[in-house]
Image 1 (tube, rainbow, N blue to C red):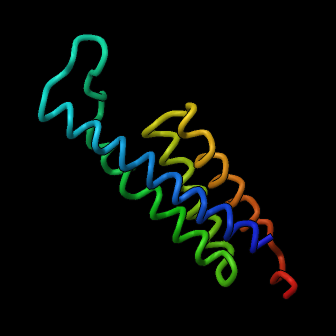
Image 2: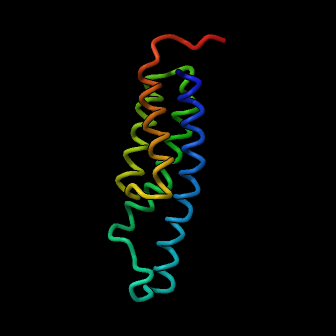
Length: 118
C-alpha cells in the first residue's frame, strides 16, 4: 500500500503542477490584461488560488516521496494536498484526477500497517 501511495502521490503532484501552473498564469494574465467581458473574469480569491497552485502539488509530491518511510506524515500531506486543491480550484474536469489520486494515496498511506514486501 505504501508503494501505491507513493505512485499516486507523485502522479497527483505532477498533474497538480500542471493545473497550478495554468491557474497561477490565468490570474496573472487577468491582472495584466484585464477581464474580458463574461469570457475571462478574475477569480474571487487570487491569493488562495496562487498559494494553492504552489503548495498543493508540492505537498502531494512530498507526501508521495515519503510514503514508504513515513506513512503517517505522508498520508497527512497527501490529504492536505487534496483538500487544498479542492478548496482553491474546486472539483472539475481538470482537477478531479489530482484530487482523487491525492486523497486515495493519503488514505492508503494512513492504512499501511507494515512495510510493503520487496
